[in-house]
Length: 451
Image (cartoon, rainbow, N blue to C red):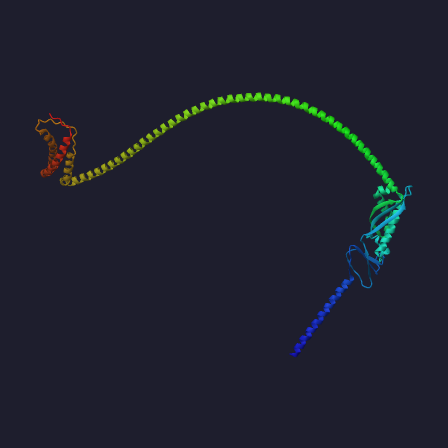
């Protein structure tokens, strides 16, 4: 157990040692990289010296980017590429035969050139030098160029054409600055003065000339303005007169046109009113004709409607009667056919059994007698004229005539059938008695003419 704990303890210690060693190596590597890795700034030029290059120089330059530097063997120096302002204040005699002392003050922006063909000159002259030294050399060089240019130009040229003066100065010192490895960005002339007030007199003269020219110009402008005003007034008066004449002419033409238009309008109104009256009369006539036609049409329509209604009613009655007649005819036809078939069957039965006819008549006799009685009872007398002797025998004879007819009918049937109908006659007489009362009622209501 103790051995295992010792082994584990030794393992932990070995791991910690290895980790510490690795961490130290990483830190050392980072420090080494920081020492040998050099990162350049775009606003400065790095000069790495100590190792001869292929071009024969003992240094190399870097503007921006990064490179590796061998410690101890190579050395790194820096040279700023930023602009530096150089104050200028130069006094010199102007040229052009004037020999006027002139003082020129201004400011220039100067920097170390980054051109590969010129920066070697700046490295040789200004490496590890303070910026004030570079400003001093630049100022002295520029002042020398200013003196040279002032001596070539007149004070008027210096004052009147500043751009020409500045470009001449920059051209004058450009070769000297290239030799120094410097570059002039700009030169601004702020003031030009002279101790003899030459420039001031020139300024007053120029001012007087300008004022005179201005006054002359103003007088000329005033004269021209007066002339233009007079011409404008004359033109305005002429234009006003022409406008008045045109207005009068236009007014007369307008009045004439208005009168003609009024006459034409009156004529058109009269014609329109006449056409309107004619049109109203035509419309009234058309309306009357239309109303008459509408009334006639309405009457015809009503008549046609009534005719159609009567015709439809008659047709309907005709169709109903026709259908009823067809129905009754069909019923009668079917009944006749049935009776014919029954008679045919009865005839066939009688041929087979002759005695069957008497049996059938006996069976039918009650109904026959009943129908005969009904037929006699249903005999209706209209107007009967009875001639009686005054005893009432004629009326009784007329009443008994119906009974006599019934008796003869029964006798005929008895002779045919061979049946005694006396008893049947008594029943018939009883029925006739009832029929007699009915007949008397009928005769009472009739018109009786007594003889």
